[in-house]
Image 1: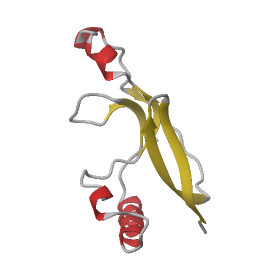
Image 2: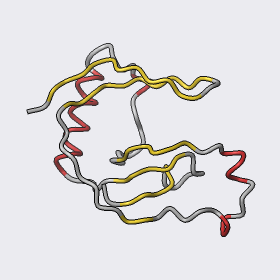
Image 3: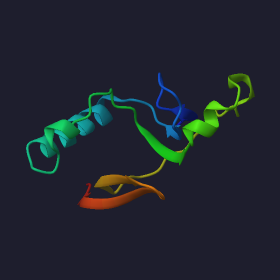
Image 4: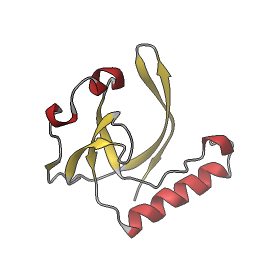
Length: 114
């Protein structure tokens, strides 16, 4: 992970992300996972992602109505470079359900790597 940014890019900010570099290997892993899920019943066609893949970890969510009240030049600057790396030992398929009190996450499948 190399930078802290507002996300998603090219849209009204809804989250603060730790963004990673795109790589051919990571892109292939993402496509392979999406194809495997699409061929199973785990991912309905209407749930298929159409936006380009952006490697990131969500650090926090923003209340849009509050964030919009802050003038753009007065918003906190988060475009900060970082150097964070870690070893990934598994991949989890996670379902998020947005509820009134915030998102709830459920691990649907866990797969060890290596």
